[in-house]
Image 1: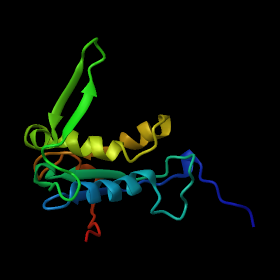
Image 2 (image 1 turned 180 degrees about the vertical axis):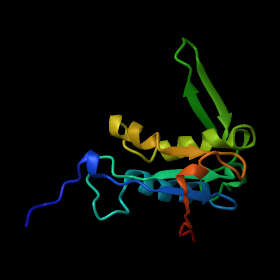
Image 3 (image 1 turned 180 degrees about the horizontal axis):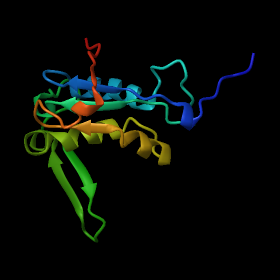
Length: 145
């Protein structure tokens, strides 16, 4: 029996919507990264983007638990000399919760062009509504402890 290798044209993608209300940021991110990568499918192939689309709503209601301290700084660089910027996780959660959720999930994906393609299938929204109703996303309940 030959080993199955998925081809990009043969991949069927689904749309899922996740309500982040009361979920831990790290647990949410790790399970969403698995779905974006396609590891939940039996047709997973490491060098092909076999993942599905994920919509996260209520990103402002995500909870920082465990080692994710609200007063811990998050650093980035603007690209200009002396352009190191920082904010605490608590400040990011209050000001731009979408960026905080996206940043955590992006760190759990491959750091190459394949990971960038996977990340483009993630849609994060602060409130409870999203503009992707035409895709008929299925509600996804995540296993959290």
